Image (cartoon, rainbow, N blue to C red; front, side, top):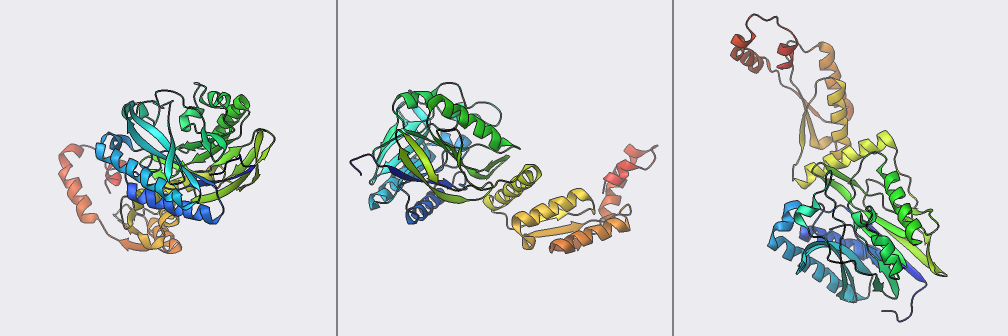
Length: 382
């Protein structure tokens, strides 16, 4: 480790797609990312919230064996840093005397040099962290990493009003690195930028915001990691909906760290962003659950056509099988439109007439339909 404070710090942001519960797989991804960052000359790699566990881990946190596996992975990863390459900041749950904490470990020189615990546990909307975690017992100060004092608030710690960032600044932090698991909704990037700018104004410090990527159940994490400089301008912007390991260069100018090099990716807007979020969510739902392919009913209408296009964009045409199931209400136009859609997408298309099962269903409902005129209800049975 350097004895004097450096004037340049190269921070790699690992915007990756972990799988909840796959501790070994997540550790392997972390190692690959660190090796990539080392080749790019990074001093430090910042990972996202609870990366080793996958976020959100929900009830897995209540299993002692899972907590032990996560902590062992963190310890093993820390040993990797004995090679003289970049240090790491990585998220993991940790069981301590004060409870089970949403935590990060900072590792360098072959060992864990610090742990920090999340203080502000979100308990609204999609978040229920108070059910499985305990808040950190006290606000811990910045971490001395190779002569640079780094504050590491965790996600909600910068969103709430308990002055975590301000206290870190008062304790001597020079820069704030924030691991996050912030799910997507339209224009969420703007909201995150405003949250971070507010904290920059409060602290006078630059803030690096590393966000998770990937789909998990109903949540979609869009990445789009970024930094806001002490001058309240966008220092760098990473891509949205894509894996990325980007190395950013920070230089000390007086008492301030300034980003002199980093990506400035263009992020998709509105409908494109929504569509790419759906692609990411579908792809991860299929792949992370081990499904080989998808079967989709094509009606010839716009809804199923969009779903088919989404599936092809997310998974590839070879993994989509479409089925038209005609009955006597199905028009020739619908048959043609469904076939044209499948042909344009390049996916498999089958026709499976369903007259017999629909007639059997209608027969079973004869008494209930007695005295009524045939109409939309019967059409919808198909």
